[in-house]
Length: 521
Image (cartoon, rainbow, N blue to C red; front, side, top):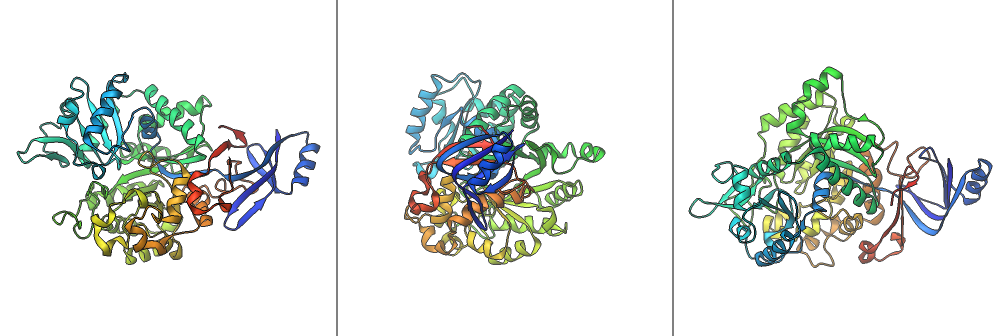
């Protein structure tokens, strides 16, 4: 079927900025974008269908290069704690949620101790729930608070594993970070079936398409989640394109299998592809576990720590690279980024391989130079600029100048893709775009005064959220713009973002979402 989309303002690409009035879609791809008279004439001759978009604005679908699809689905089915201001409020919300929850585990996400008077504890949760395990994850997803039942089920109640926070008497408080948090998360995941994952993933994909995101880089994907995705795809129920990066612990068990079959990056089809592996090198600034080259300004005895040994990282990176897999390594602190750069540098030919650093929150000028020289790609989360409102206290006046240097990266020619790390941040792309162009200006955040020169403009933001993300996913020839030959993945919005004041950008609404020219929202 040939379809002509007419009577529209179509932003076909952002670099260069190309605006057209109509397009033709056939077999899921754009075959022409340009004059409406030509579109109507061609479609009529081919006995196709005309869709009138009533003068509305069309943009390429957003590509979120780094998010957690399964955890987004879980978040949509759990207690939302992002606006909690006190431990008492947390307990009140938990008490109300438990009355209707039917799951074996009670889950919540989004709290931030910086917004509350203190860290929550297992004793707080025990006051509300004793018989079921409770796990409430911090907004960064690098820490959680568990009730006593959950601490017992995970074996963390008597554990000396790093990351189990203890009180002055050496008794676990219920807060777990990094390694111990991963233990708790794995224990919960083991209780889930493929059908459970299918439910979470379908909910997540439905929500994702409603936000105007048409392709995602699904990082830290478990084997169960990937199996569920294959089931959903085989049944024709995919609402977004998924590019998966497996959790490296599970992926390593398959390395010999990959080698024996010759499986490499990109195996799959246009809807679901296996890209590579995700490794976590350090933690988060919010939990003070990101690995810095000098101590935290608000915690002088602590510089954070690596989540993986440097030699082990090198061995994993080398093995994955030899298999032809793309590597994505989480690095937030500058010391962790030193380690990642060192591991990548030994591989060679990085511009072709497009191995990635995820987040890159604190970047020194020498690191910017090295990343650009080597050709390492970066997946950024601009909403962190506003969410990390406390960052000046964490890293001080000198290092805050190194935080989220978007403009400097662009000037160096570093390949960038935008993302949300959802559910760490809202999947709403307009929140991300707003953050990248304002950097906390209207929230009166200190980071704005120290780094306002790192703001980018709207064209740049939309480019890195579409074609930029497509590039670091190896999809620049098929996705990211509405040019001839590419998939017809696009959105219809209620307002033209280029005609708005920057403060209004976050108010743009998605009215329709199309995948391969077919409406999915």
